[in-house]
Image (cartoon, rainbow, N blue to C red; front, top):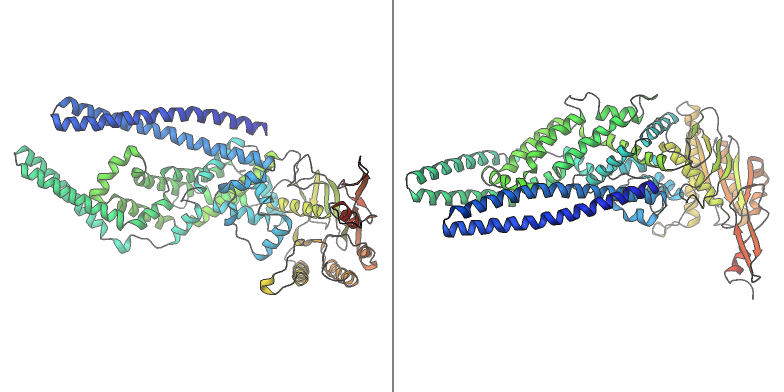
Amino acid sequence: MSDYASQIETIDRDLHELEATDGRFAIWRMVFFVGLVLGVGFAITTQHVIWASIAGGSLLAFLVTVVRNETVRDRMELLRNQSRTLHRLQARLDRDWQSLARDGVGVRSQEIQLTDEQQALAGDLDLVGEASLFQLTSMAATTPGVRTLANWLCSPVDPPIAIDRHASVKHLADQPDNRLRFYVLARDIGGSSGDPESFVKWSKEPNWLPPHRWLIPWGNFTALLAVAITIAMVVGQMTDHADWLRLGLYALIGIAVINLAIGSFFLGPVAAIFQIAMASRRSVNDYAELFDAARWLPETTDNANGPTSRIRSALLADEGSSGSASQGMRELAKVARMGGLKQTASTFLLYLPLQAFWLWDVRVLRRLEEWKSRYSDQIPTWFDALGELEALMSIAALQHDAEGWISPEWLDDQSTLTFEGLGHPLLKDHVRVTNDVTIGPEGTLLLVTGSNMSGKSTMLRSAGLNVALAMAGGPVCCRRMSLPPIEMGTSIRVSDDLSQGVSYYMAELNRLSAVVAHARELSKRRDGGDTKRIQFFLLDEILQGTNSRERQIAVARVLRFLVEAGAVGAITTHDLELADDEELMRMAHTVHFRETVTPDASGDERMTFDYKMREGVSPTTNALRLLEIVGLGEQ
């Protein structure tokens, strides 16, 4: 935290100095512009060479000032992006969810695309959305990066993939300066119209120019005509034919008006294409640098099919060939330099006559579409790889900042999940309470009892969030954690759907049915040798929408189905009758959380929780005492 604060302080100081410099440049720009206007005005009215010299000198000084001022403003924008990025890193450490939510470029949760099953899991475990694992982890600013990271957090993977991801994450975590540069560049692109999703979509669309090819010969014709008219005007000036000069000037103005009108009213789609493919010359160079960041990954891994090898292959392999991302972006940068003439004040005076007499935008578009024709097949692969790289970069920030978090251990030959010092990763360090939790082996489950607010649901989410982190390739909030290949199934937050006529109880039954079907499907796949994964289920206070006796029978039946399918998991309840069920006791290891009630100085009861897990069934309940505490006890 102090390191980030120190960097922000340095950037703020540099920004203050640059803002002062920018203000001085603004004054000099105005002075030179006024000098230019006055010089031209007096040169026309007095015909004195001195005024023409003043006008020329002012124009030159103005252009030099503009170029230098643009350099200062580019530096200011870079520093502002660095500051925003460091503030986000700082907010993640402090679990400042409001600041993270305000950082629209860094979050972009509206871009996340999940299946119904992933959305259910994400809602149960706070994987995406406000104050979520995604919000804690994400430094992604582009659409592919956002979607890839969210998908990784909500999807199961086999251990070799998770191990490969984690090896890359640890390697990138040790490169804070490189990562900061990557985050800033990605933020610059993610906030522009040249976001990768738009770029990929454009690469798949038909070229705009073929149906409008007449624009090229028309531009050639007007350019040649303008040259001929200019020569005629020079000859007229030399031979004292004043009419040639006047008529030629009118003709040039006419050509310019026609071509500029074509550019304004007919080439609107071309401008939109430029905004996507070449949002600025800097954005193309940013893409090239982001692709080159794949060099920061480990050069060799144990998994040839893992994300590390896939990213390096897509972005770096065969560099110099026609399919190389680096080569492709270098070629696009050349086109962007042509298209960028109108984007800066220093080159706009060159762009204007080129567009007015030669339809410069059409020339640039032709080069751009030729480039797209060469690389359109590779472009989606490039940005898929960039999304994976950005996801790894995001998780690497968590690996670097999460002091005391460890690497998970994957075990193929057992069915037990072991958490030593299990903590909730979304809580601040000073309020987090940790517990040692063991879930499994196959044929058993963990039954968590306890009174209201004692920490049962938090423990379930702690386990699920850390499993999601492990599968995404991240560090875990434990002293030690080992797990087998698993897929998660949950029923924690269930709501009714009146629009579909689904009651709360039926909605919960549907969720439980999906969890059981998932466990059975995995069991069949294991029997067929297609997978080693088992289901890891997390069920919180299920089937509360029915009477106690039927609930006891129904819960025991659901758990029996899950255990018979080889699933392992945990279920919470504050219903002590459920904990007494004989069938449930045969398969369950029972633990509990409890509260402590003590009188305060005024003699009123005060209820506290230590959130520590203990062996056995909960010996206490607190529902009636909570009623009294909130003023709803008997008078």
